[in-house]
Image 1 (spheres, rainbow, N blue to C red):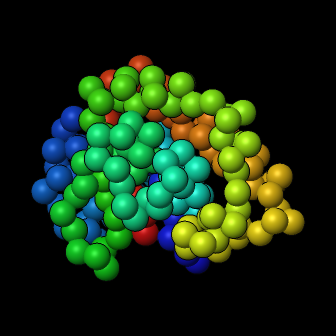
Image 2: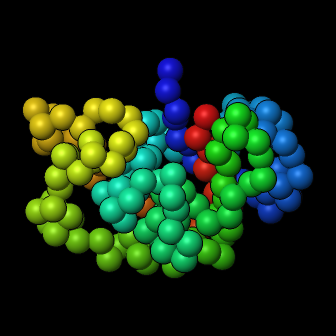
Length: 167
């Protein structure tokens, strides 16, 4: 199956409740929220690749205070066991800065430096960074970026927080 990334919008009350939960409870709650219709966005397996494209490092080493890093892995890490997955959040009042940073990204510049060998040598998840797929991978990453930006803009407009999980 793999490690899938997913973003979910949550209210203030829900965020406060989730911050008190353990890993398994967090996943169950996220699934319930999605089933109940909370807006969500599934980035699938491209979260690490997008983070690497934007920052030059794997998402396994988030860059504190770097809005592009935070755009992928969020700002605040939940204290859960390593076996329980990865859960983070971005609070509503932090979204505007992240959105502003995302809107400043120059995709022409990123494309000129898009080197799949660096993805492979840095062990970026998943192991799909093959030269014969370069154009398709570029379009996938660019599409995920655009969809994530749109999701954050909706969250900001709705005054919602965002939970990110990788399980």
